[in-house]
Image 1 (spheres, one colour):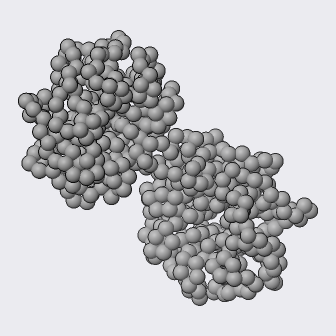
Image 2 (image 1 turned 135 degrees about the vertical axis):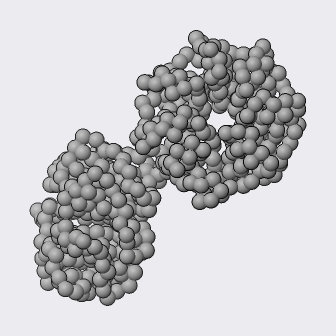
Image 3 (image 1 turned 90 degrees about the horizontal axis):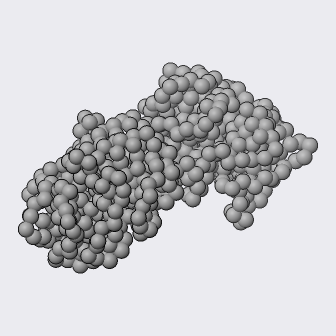
Length: 566
């Protein structure tokens, strides 16, 4: 089934760099196989300084091995809000819709959950004494063999957990709620506040801090007292003891984020950080990690060395937040996508990895004869070549954007065509790129051919060109709508698509309009003349079975920029 899925179709969404494949062409619909929207980290935990996990939105998990941070496959797309473990081979993560994951030291797998409610915190005293809390007063516990639900005595949202032992556990949440578990029952405590509490952490069972929306509390083993009340929000706490505590703070009035450090001899000290932090964890007072982010940066990891905070990993800085414009598919284990700022992503049948790219400009099209002979073109006339080992910049003859690329693999020496803005037409003859004379100044968006002497290009204003091996000539398209994509099963069976929902067909003699409606198409590709796909704005996917065009449900709202298959 996997071979069928991947070989049939691959689609990229430009707005958040998302690729989908059809799980079942006319049955189950489309499924996401790679996504790079901005995702924020919510929690962090580690078994040691060389084994740390951060979890966040969309099932994002990042692992640190003491040298590098690497994204790890989680097996879920649910938001992950909490993480805790008893060891490096017994780790739990929790999140939306009752999601519970377990890591055995090698793989993450999804556990069967008792609830569909969001779980916001997880903590344990040992591998056989684990608690999870969340919305509607939900409390779950695990004895190492299975999970069961406990009676919390409340229906408010519980946001955080911490304990000094399995018989002294604190849960905090909405309305100033504080519950304490004595090994048998969860009992309410008087917090002295009605403000929402988001985090709890202590040194001992009689030395505990709780904080949240505009309030910080301290527990001395007898009573809770307010230590600080203002408009700031404390989202996370972590410390080596009750006299050495760190807090992740946001100030909505100032629009700033801080790490607040409390020491018994110096009281609270604030250090500004570049993004909001939602989780804290450390091994010592000189080795602390904060996780968070915002919509601009995506997931961000910060490290404290005892003196200052430094950004050590950021989603946007690692090419994770990029529009993807085009892809090349050699097989279901050989796919490369190109996008903004020189982004190149490679799929090997198991995972997606960023490729080393010599470009810092947008790559708008990719194609070639084989996985050892590929080209990528784009902004300001940039051209790259890939020999199967590395990408290298090539000298190009133009400075206009290059928007489309096509290679004729049947030639003894495969020839490649590129088209771009201002009517740009290029050809690579195996040695160098040459500029071809163009009959138009309109921007050209895509190029496709049946052979090296039968090539078509489309562009703005209904521009349609044909190349016979000698020269490019304008062809009457019958429309003034912008044309954005072109593909054919042969030289006498060619489709072109574009704005206003237009679909044109060429039978070898003339172009005729098949459809015109609303929306727009960005790309078209097919496996045969009876298996053709067109994609475009608002997640539009149309399929042609040789008789009629039908709309398929994509489950995507953004623009689909390219569609390709082996």
